[in-house]
Image (tube, rainbow, N blue to C red; front, side, top):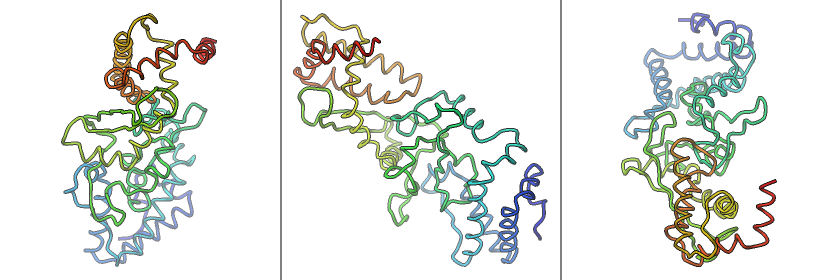
Amino acid sequence: VEYSDNLFPAWFVPIVNKSPKLKEEFVELANRILGKSTLKRKKIYAVFLNNNRIHRLCESKAFPLKELDDDLHDVAESAKKVFLRLYDTTLQGTMVEKELGENIHEHYKKFRGMNESQACPFCGLENYPDRIKNSRAQYDHYLKKTKYYFSSVNFENLIPMCNVCNQAPNKHVKDILFSDPECTVRRQVFYPYSNSSGARVAITNVVPGEVGEGGQWNVSVEPAEADETEKVETWKNVFNIEDRYAARVAEDAENWIVDFIYQAGLPDQEEGVDSWRDALRAWAVSLSNINEHKVVRDGILKQAYFEYLHRDASDPEVISIKTMTQSDMFAARTIAVGQ
């Protein structure tokens, strides 16, 4: 019936009372809610609960998304101020660390330790940027905080993501629940903290010829299971997966080949193309074994690239790899790698 400290869990009370601006905004929000009818207050509470059902909103288009009515605009504006402050200032402040015994960096280190992954799981192209002390990946608001502000400090909605995935033209401020800019058509989305069957990556050379630096590559990504087709399509769209994968192949394929030549057991120079295809197949299998146990930077993309080379590449493309081992360029690069 009125604003009081009883609105908060005990550990949070001193944080509110020592944060004048936060308390002022909480009081404003409470008073605006208290001024509404019982029916309207129930609607506000229902929207709050609904917007925090992150898993169901992502994976079920049938689960309705509830939003505040236009006549609750004043409550919406007050709530947005409170919850964005909770994320931008309070959550990352020293008072939370004092009350909980842990700061946001320590929380992130626990996340990384439990998941044992260096590469961003949304793209697999970038490492998490935490190799420098007190640096970490951004906690992305999977449902964007400017619209779904009620879930701004819900850790089911906070997902460590590499900076590239979290910037335009990739996810950035896209509303992942909708396939159209007007936000009228719902779609299924992978929920990051649940299991999935994964996807298959296939690579083809648009202009077959010598492999190596540059070139034009086509990358297609398909779901491993048909019932996840829409989720995979959403993921590809939100993070521009296929275009980014094709660009990475053009940029790094030559380096991948150098690694193969330097580390794999290669056929003798006089042996034919079939022996080199066998060596490429064995290398693809070794990459597959790594990918099954750990997410590594470019892992599934390199595997798909070598699967293309041993299975679909033309004989001249395979021979060009053999020729690279005899070039002055390769000799200089392997010396540098050895040093």
